[in-house]
Amino acid sequence: MAFRTAEMTDPGDRNGAGLRLMRLGAATIAGMRPTYVKALFDQYAPRFEAALVDDLDYRGPALLLAAVAVTRAAAGRPLIFSRAIDLGCGTGLAARAFSAVVDEIIGIDLSPRMIERARATGLYAELDVSEIVEGLGGRPDGCADLILAADVMVYVHDMTALLREVARVLAAGGLFRVHGRKPCGRGRGVERRAALRLWRKLRASARRRRGPRARPVGIGIVSHESGVQVPGLVVVAAKA
Image 1 (cartoon, rainbow, N blue to C red):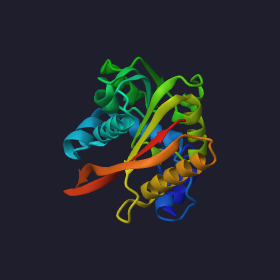
Image 2 (cartoon, one colour):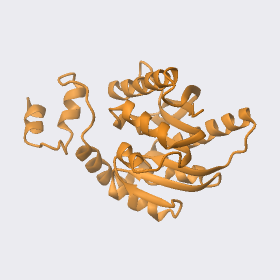
Image 3 (cartoon, helix red, strand yellow):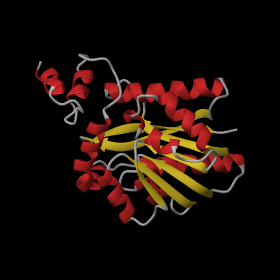
């Protein structure tokens, strides 16, 4: 009842009462409100890297880079890209991992405070404060040969809209690299469902020839929480 009352008195759900109701099974699973996500990461930005990298030993971008390297080697192509779009770029961890192999990186994130820290890295050619589907929507057709999404898919409810924009924005032969927690029994409910929804949508869009063809590239340890290894799944999608 307390969460329900809090949600009713906070139309933008800035404090996340709606999300807590979903996790308790007291509300239908839906997208997280942008107001909540923005507030969450604006508050988190000053300690984001310390919490993720130092405390949790986060390795998501490294797993993405390793998957890209394996895929390029298998195709006999060099590990170099003209333009990458970093979805949910945060403070720039993915840009640090990929800056040596990408000529130009564009970052998209809903949090202005995260974008401030990403800008301070000097690794982005352009930064856009936007929800990721909307941010992709403002990009020209075929303008990127690499799109990265590291641990951002849990915040995306409409996978179909995202994949449609990814397919449009990717150049022929371009790669979409997604990293998230492995969808397994130990995962948190909302995160596990997000990972499963993404994988199913990628496979379905590929079968209908409406999006990049996808396959899982590997599983690695993405972080440690309370001394326990947290497995992550990397999915690769290539536009024909």
